[in-house]
Length: 516
Image 1 (spheres, rainbow, N blue to C red):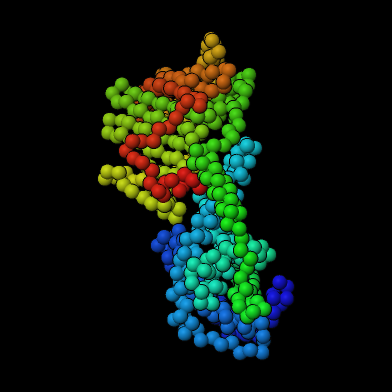
Image 2: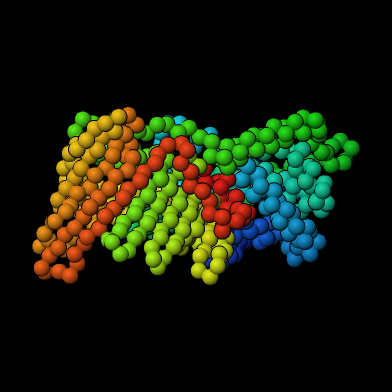
C-alpha cells in the first residue's frame, strides 16, 4: 500500500486537473447536503452521494490507468461514461446509502451500548448534548465507514458489471481480502478525522478570537484539500484491483468465494448482537446505583439531604394550595427507572398535562434540528419525536413554588419524632422563601410556618403542610394561603404516558432506541 500511496501522491502533484475535478465534486456534494440540511437536518446524513459516486466512479478508470502508468494520458470521456454507467452508479449510490445507513446504525448500537452501560455502572450520567447529537454523529461515522467497505462494489459497477454481480463481488472481497478492506476503511477514517477535527475546532474556537478560529479551521480544510485527491487516486488503484486483475487464461480473476454457511453464521451472530443491544436500549436496562445518602444529625442538613434523596429517586410530588376561594393543584412524577417525566397542573381556568420520555416531548416547544417528526393533538398541543426527558431532567428542580419547600432558606428544627418519622419545621420569613411564596414590602407575618415529614430510615420526604399569612400597609399583596404536600418515592412510582398520545410513532421509536 505505501507504494500505491506514493504513486497516487505523485500523480495528483503532476495532474492539477484531477485535483481540481475531485475537489469540485466534493464541494458540489457538500453544498447539496448543506442545502438539504437547511430544510431537514437529517438529510445531511441520509442523502445518498448522488453527485460523488456517479462522477468519481465514471472517472475512476482513467485515473487508475494514469496512476499505474504516469506516461499515459488519461482518456477521460467523462460524458460518454456517464451515459453508459452513470445510471447504474446512481442506483448503486442510493442502494449503497440504504445499506450504509442501516449498517452504520447497527455499528453505533453495538459500540455505544456497552460504553453507556459502563458509564451507568460507574454511577455516571450522559449529558443532554451527547444524547441529542451522538446518534446523528454516530450514524454518520458508521455510514462513512461502511461506504469504505462498499467501495469495491462501485468499482465493479464502473467497470460495467451488473448491480447484483457487483454486490456479490463486493461482499466476497470484503470478507476474503481483509487487508484491502482495512485500507479502504482507513481512508474513510482519514476523512472522518478531518471533519471531526474541524467540528471540534469550530466548537471550541467559535466564541474566541476570529483569527484563531479561521486559522484552525482553515488548516484543517487545507489538510482535507491535500488528502482527498491523494486518497481518491489511491482508492482507484485499490478497488481497481478487484476488477482489473486477470488470470493466466486471460479471464478476470475473482476473489475466493466465502463459504455461504460461514457468512450466514456471521450474519446471524451480528444480527443477534444488534437485536440484544437494541432490546437493552429500548427497555432501559441499565445499572442504577443507589444515590441516596444517610441523613446528617442536624435538622437543617437532614432536610437538605432528604430533598436530595427524594429528587434522586423515582418520585411523585403533589402540591395543593388554597387561599379559601381558589385552589391550585400541581403534580410532578419523575420515573428515573424508565426515564419518564410527567406534569399535571389544574386550576379553575387551566387543566394542562406535559409528558417527556426518551422519545417524545408533549408540551412546549422542541428543537427542530433533532426532532424526528411533529404532530398535533387537538388545536394547540404539539407532540415532538424528541428526547424530551433529557432536555427537562437536566434542569429538574421540584422545589419552591409548585414543589416541595426549598432547602437552605433558613434554620429547620425538629417538632416531633415517632415511628421512624421526623417532622421538621421552618418559620418566619424563611418559611415564605422555602415555599416560594412572595412576601409584600414591610410585611407583618401573622402565620408563617412549613412542616415536612421525613422518613429517617430511607432518608426521603413523605409530605407536609404550610400555613402562610402576611400583610403590609405598603402593598395590596397580602398572601394568606394553605399548602399541602404529598410525596411518594420508590421503584413503584411510574409516570404513565398520557392516553391522548396514542401509540408511538416511528420517529419516537427511533429516539427511544438511540437515546439510551
